[in-house]
Length: 246
Image (cartoon, rainbow, N blue to C red; front, side, top):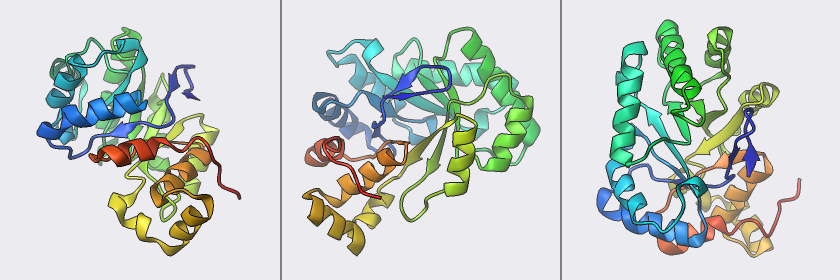
């Protein structure tokens, strides 16, 4: 578990469900939960919140043991829209709250983002959301937001992997006590063909995917790999019995 800046804990490894078809969601979620996953990351934009909600209803697990993330899409930015968009996501998910709600993209309008964040702060202060954060924000976006924010984001979800290490951004996040979370850590499978990654995997008796996921964990990045294949869902979680050398 990783401790956020408000002392809430998030699993360091979760399941991403980007572009997973509705027909596959229930099977994938059951496989993941049975394997030991407790965090699931979705978004309005993924168009599978409802399917995820249906799957969650069939799980034999306490709600408090799950960490569910969803995201606010750009068409719902602005003070007037945030609460209704959030409540619509809750309805689709069949939940009373989500554990983490993110602004999905920074956009171009600083004032609109500030207004949107203030509305999310209100929901957080009312206890309707457990944690609030952002996604795809660069340093200048965060600096602009932090000038106006009363509550600091707990997470910035970014693309991050050994081909895109985001060192400068991650150093800034660390200084601000904002956790980095990696989407698409496996680059849709592209990075798994890298010869160096394969070499390391062979040396460790692990798979290339496990090496990349472990790299994220060793770099203090919360990671949410996606897979629909049962063996790979299990494989992606089996990364806690080794470490990478410097």
